Length: 266
Ligand SMILES: Nc1ncnc2c1ncn2[C@@H]1O[C@H](COP(=O)(O)OP(=O)(O)O)[C@@H](O)[C@H]1O
Ligand SMILES: [Mg+2]
Image 1: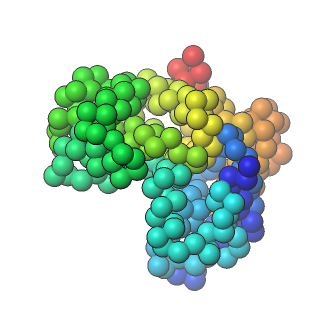
Image 2: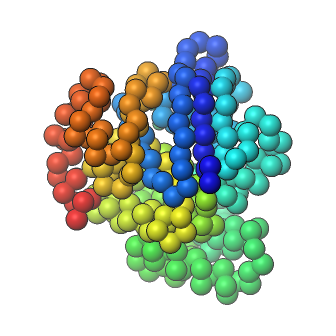
């Protein structure tokens, strides 16, 4: 099954330059693909483009097909349905997108109810289960809390649990764990792998942590100046990178991340 196809896809902001530059990428069902690259290389812009979330100042060229459907031909309502039910996204600061005046439990209920015929106790049971899976201690208390009563890291984990709640076909994660400490990071990484194993979720993960990319992905892509300069099986990209830039990036990141890699790869 074709999950995502990106063909010769470019994105320009304010007509100025190619933030994404002729990217082509096909992702198969159940695959985990990591995208790495230095800050400003176009990773977030690419993910936003795939979800139809670009600002007005951006113009896209080329084709994107999600779950076999052309993005450009989707009506806003179809796109919203796709984003709510089949495709989930986790941002670096997902916690910030929560409703500040509503308790976490109420937000879960609202979210789950929109997508199924669940009673309140059923919603709460699901929410507790999901919160425990992202290793949030005292999940009952979290459900009764307002977002501001939780730390940034806890909110992020709640956001990740919500994104996983719908068992999406496709999960786009933009540096989901970079603000979390290393131990929590490793737990979240395992949850994402678990999601793929249990439900066949396809995952595209943007990360600057080469250890995480190496540990969890089938393929790794490297972006530079908007272009996908390298894309291949993880082993090959890490041990025999074809692109000079990838080699530099690997050298720098692996040296810095030795300790993190050890923790993540346990
Ligand atoms: N909303 C925006 N308006 C104008 N330029 C932007 C906007 N968002 C990102 N850019 C530019 O596009 C390029 C790619 O940015 P981004 O996709 O955020 O990279 P990354 O996620 O790899 O750090 C950068 O040069 C950035 O400055
Ligand atoms: Mg980014």
